[in-house]
Structure formats: structure tokens, C-alpha cells
Image (cartoon, rainbow, N blue to C red):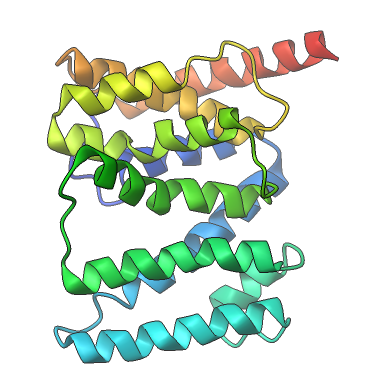
Length: 231
């Protein structure tokens, strides 16, 4: 069984989310991919040139594009693809501002100086994308935020090999039953992330992709049973 590389280009956290979408409703997967594509396009503007001024011009263009999305006037094909999944609200646009902030940090090459900074940066990477993709309300509950945190800090925890990060995530997300607030894809992905956090915290080998695929399938069946029993 092949081990997932710690330097996997797509990121292990993103792989967990992809598996979650694989076993969730098709519309969930489509919304996640559209949101992820938009996020990646915005963050790519931070690395298109070695000149910071050039990157900032492109980032300003994306800032204007977010405003155009709210006004239903997107220009970029990726923006149009995202807009096809529903109306873009002011709340969605406000969340997207976090992508711009993260891109600014990438342009300035600002490194995280503390565990809190790491959590915030990681949440912006995956957590905001999850919330945008799911259309979560402004007052999204603690379950939703914890699931986002579990997934979004996974890559950071593995990269840093800091047990404190893994332990904090293990404590934050430990729901056996799916929350009504959480889409199936997010619950499955967060459960996979916690499993990987545990392996990392205990210095065990990172499980392979086949193991995660089987685990995701079992979680999907568990999610269905738990959801039906709660109805």
C-alpha cells in the first residue's frame, strides 16, 4: 500500500475533502470543486511573478472580480463556473476576502509565528473554502468550525511534526454522529483528517490512499445510518 507523500502537491487535507465529496451528493462535490478552483486561481496570483508589484496588480484584479461576482458580472471562466452554483451573497464575498489576505501573506512571504497563526492560516486555506462551498450561514455552529479546523490544519500538523497541533485538533472534533449543520462531504473529510492527525501525533506511518478510500466508504455508510436514525 503506497504511503501518502508529506509533500503531496494537492495536500493531504485536500485529498480528504476529495474523498468526502466522492461519497457525498454530487452537488456537494461540484460546489467544492468550483470553490476550490476559484480559491486556487486567487492564490496563484501571489506566485505568478517574482515581482511583488506584478502579483499585487493581479490580486487587485481578483478583488474587483469578487465584487463583480456579487453583482452577477463575473469575467473569468473560473468565476463564472463558481457563480453557476447559486447567488453570491455579501457574506460569501466577505469570506473570500480571507483568500485575498492569505494571498497577500504569500506575496510578502509572511511565516506563521505561533500556533495561533498556524491555525488561522490553515483555516483560511481549507476552512473558508468549505464554508463557501457549503453556503454555510453566518452563524455556522461550533461543529462546523471544528470540522473545518480538523481538515484545514492537517497539512500544517504533518509538515511541522508538532504534536501540539495534532492534539488540539483531536480534541476539537470528536463527534460520532453527523451534525445537521455539516454536509456529508465535510463530516467524512474531517473524520479522515482526525484519523491522520492521530497517526501523525503517534509518529505512525501516514496511511496510504487505498486505506483512506476504504475508510471514506465506510464513513459514508455510517453517515447514512446515523442520519436515518436521527430522523
